[in-house]
Length: 96
Image 1 (cartoon, rainbow, N blue to C red):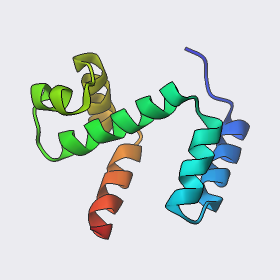
Image 2 (tube, rainbow, N blue to C red):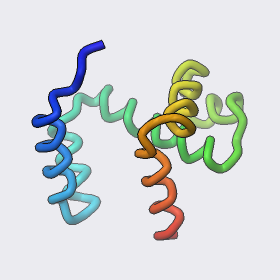
Image 3 (cartoon, one colour):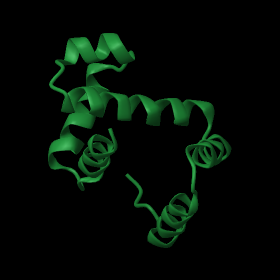
Image 4 (cartoon, rainbow, N blue to C red):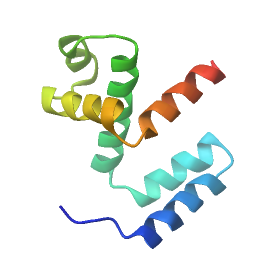
């Protein structure tokens, strides 16, 4: 697997952080991602939310249409990844 260019990744992160509203972020994501990429990102985050709430793989697959391979990958990232999902999920809980 190819590595992500750290300079390009930092620029993308800065661009995302510069957006001030959900509408701005949505517009940016629609411009920068293909429809499929955006669907995949949204699906993975939905899977993470359901995993965090304790749902099982079958329930998550039924609710999101995600394959068990995708659910497993998200679960691994959620439990052993760089804490990106955890940070987003914890902040989501704070704002509810």
